[in-house]
Length: 112
Length: 113
View 1 (tube, each protein chain N blue to C red):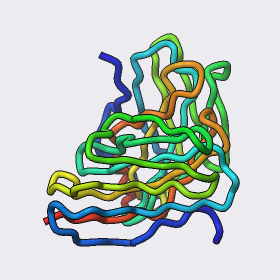
View 2 (cartoon, each protein chain N blue to C red):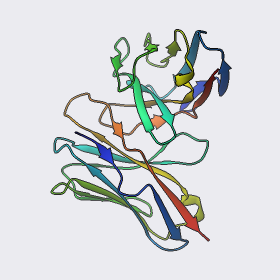
View 3 (cartoon, helix red, strand yellow):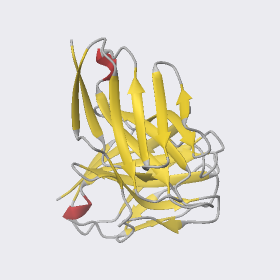
View 4 (cartoon, each protein chain N blue to C red):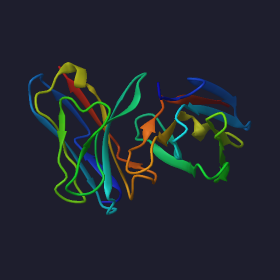
């Protein structure tokens, strides 16, 4: 692994289903982030983690949960997906919150 | 209210010309800024950053200027190339401490060959 990986690349999901988007980084970065990107709205922060064992809410956290059990992984869970969660989801990491973030390739999620 | 925004949603530039992409911010407490480039179908890519104790920072073909008096940030791309075509985002931290970055909505740069 080099950098940040996300899985799956894309997913079509029925409304009401549970879904976990995976994110793994191998740079030993302390901070990790989840964004959603929608046309005309740019990147909006969902949740973040400044270090393993801690998480925080971003701009649009409702309907999403995260965990940070270790430095490398930061999964994002949709407990019961709704169509408004159709979006492209990006995971990012940085060595610190005052440093540039490195982004993964994204997951395109469609909720029907 | 507080915002990170861009003056122009789209910008078309002739190949070889210089490009200037602008960004405004409203919180004088913002002290760290980053420019990102996002090509179609890809994640944002870090270009250059600047801290509030600087007015200018240069990279390879790119320069970021920070004017704290008017709360304005710009990205200058020299000798724009077709590969520069992308959406460019500015981002800021709004407070000291561990506050995550907040992104603007982006400017699409189109390079005309």
